[in-house]
Image (cartoon, rainbow, N blue to C red; front, side, top):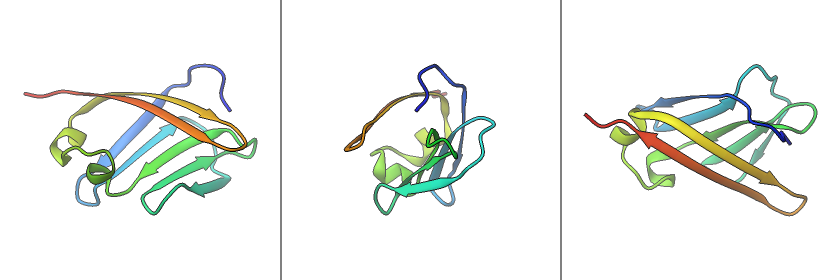
Length: 95
């Protein structure tokens, strides 16, 4: 688990309605499926490196328009042996 702030990148594909959030420059080793639409990727040290959300507009209860207009994502994770806590703040730009 990362204890410091790491830069992240994100992409949203409106046709697939898929949002991909990742920590930069880390190699994928393992994936945990949280449910049918949300997967977490980890590196060889079991550190979080990516979050993929399928059917993102449904899972996040928002619109594809909003997801296409994300300007920043603030993601906080806490992973224990029993639980995974994900807290995220999405900032959108509207014209």
